[in-house]
Length: 130
Length: 128
Image (cartoon, rainbow over all chains, first blue to last red):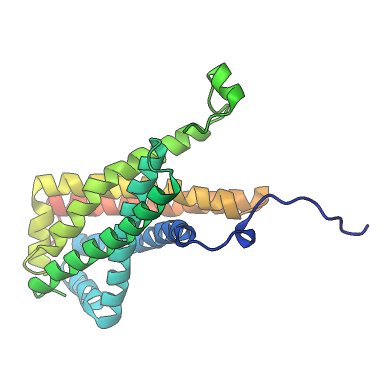
């Protein structure tokens, strides 16, 4: 049977790209990244509970350059998911659906999450720990 | 602006199934993770160093141990809820969905128990 043209519901390809779409996808992507990154938190805690030798190995690994890159990404993913999550909670309460408001809140999420990431790493650097 | 359908508004009813519960606990756990996560990130970053002695002393304080257990449990729960939405969206077929769901349950159970037990052990000073 020949394929028939059927009406499709609107999907990604038919919309003109708007950065709020990327932000929405990033919320899900950072959520998945945080789930995976939770392994790091578990690794750190379990190593600490296991004693000094294993813990020191973990901290050395996390303190290496690749370790720091992963932790930096993890921290940004956390702050982004947190800020975007608050934006979602506001929507769930029925606020901020106007197009202009939604664009502004999207930009605010990016700026605040970058700011929080910078603040965290400034604090780490000031402690000489990063 | 209301997203309710006219029929739903007249009947005064919401979802007929268990979807609302999932939606609700995902948001409640997410809201709880805002203060817990911010506290953890900045409290750990503010430590003078991340040596074994410092971190053990940090987790050894009862209020820190309580917050860490809450963080570990809530983060595990929120992760499990969030990933289920991803599975529901992208994993098709009854068999595949069942396998992935059970696998995620297993991983999260192990992770959650391991993190909580680690904090309890450090808190009670069991490690050498």
